[in-house]
Length: 125
Image 1 (cartoon, rainbow, N blue to C red):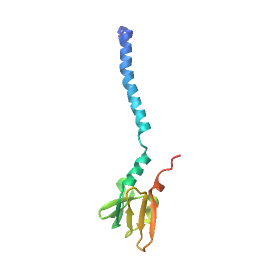
Image 2: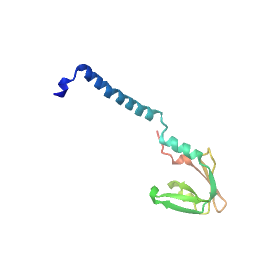
Image 3: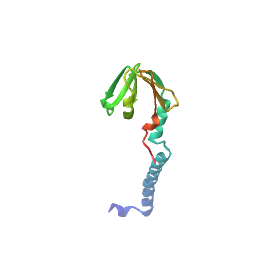
Image 4: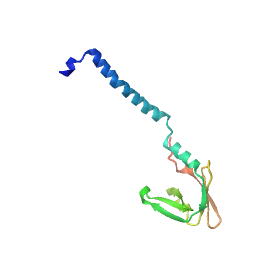
């Protein structure tokens, strides 16, 4: 019964008042999806900015962070990717310079291993 009392002009005004904000919301969401950097790009930029070096004092698994293994050097925590775990041991020295994807591992026996962060990103086709 209430619908019968509303004029055609009022129905148009109500329709526009509802449709226009919804169109802006959908447009904003689509714009954010299209123009925002992807997760891999954000991770790559973060990894490029990292800079550290030092000898590993201790290692532990962080249960609150999906059981990620961490190496600690001078109270600085360094997360270790699962596929890197066999290469990094207590007493090794790690070196990562800014704007590089290379992690250098200096072993106790004097050898050197170079690992690349890009090997850990999901392959997108």
